Length: 288
Image (cartoon, rainbow, N blue to C red):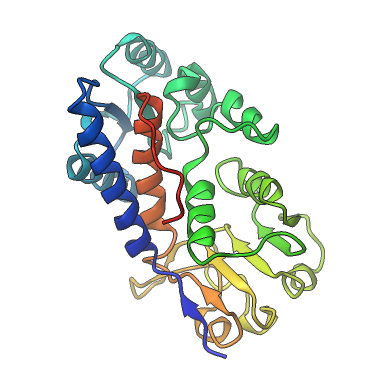
């Protein structure tokens, strides 16, 4: 078996085209153009690239991008005050705090300062709680993007065992909620899980979200499984790679995402989706 490649770039492009069309149509009816504020503290190289990609995405579909690049010594109180100003600004519909943050700043404190209705990352306890109760509003971008990819390939969820490796608040835990809502039976593995291979071998749907190169060997992939590789690491030779041993896994899986070019583009596209949603736009729920 040779796996079909799930092309995240293509699906993300389709989503962004839908968002652009929606924005133009609604703005022609006198609806306000959405505004997204992105806060970055320091000059982490990866973060700078991520923020640039988000700004380019905003430009592509017509969202007003507000960029706050602050020095690494910026205090937590300054950031709290800035967030409160943005909460009160009617031209700002989405607020995002780029991580990682300096050690003297508590990321969770800042997230909880964001108005939940402007929390386009979907990390506020209010939004995570809504997702857990099967009443999602603004959903965490990467897990929601994964669901869009799975829907794109017409993945069946009911009577399927979904195994998630990695239990972070940003990906693993909300990913479990998303798959539960869809009807899958879900196992969430983490650093205390004994015999990880045992669970991976059972997975009809595998989501790897740790960020450790080669964590999951290809031989453990179940024949015909769908493999979603969220993890991304840079090897000593500069090459980007995922958590899954791609070459062997792609010989056993039915569907698999590449790294890069799989989940990453969807994360940015869903951020833009959430920004329009926060601004009151109605977006088609048809599969991409």
